[in-house]
Image 1 (tube, rainbow, N blue to C red):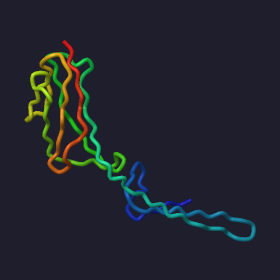
Image 2 (image 1 turned 135 degrees about the vertical axis):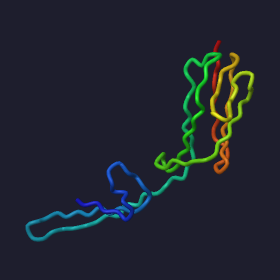
Image 3 (image 1 turned 90 degrees about the horizontal axis):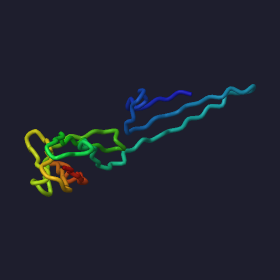
Image 4 (image 1 turned 120 degrees about the vertical axis):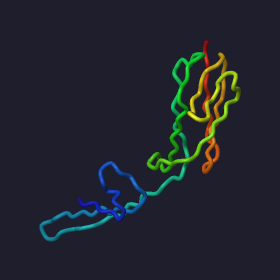
Amino acid sequence: MISQSKDNSDLPGKTNPGTAYVVGEVPTPHEVIADSLSIMVTCTAELGPDYERPPDPFRVGMSFPLRVRLYTCSRQITLTDELTCHTSDSLIVSLDTLSLKATARAPADATIWVAGRKYAGFPVLFVTVVP
């Protein structure tokens, strides 16, 4: 069986949108039977974030970097954007917008929203701060 593609998606470990062909031959006593199959890989075009989670437990005085990885096409393509973050209560969790670091200030629950310039808002990150 031979696999060939138009866009190098046949390289090991790669999954790219495009078309691939699978060609096979089966020799029989009287003839060789050959056939081929075209496989089309498409992008699902979902947009999702992967957040770096706070330490567990997230105690007053602790910090964690607010890292967000944006992806699409079933996590095959990583996107870049200029992100801004907001918290539901800066007395519980404060955000350093320059270093994108979240710091626990008081015990309670808080919500962190992340928004991108190109890709709008993303699902929120819920955090619980313990004493």
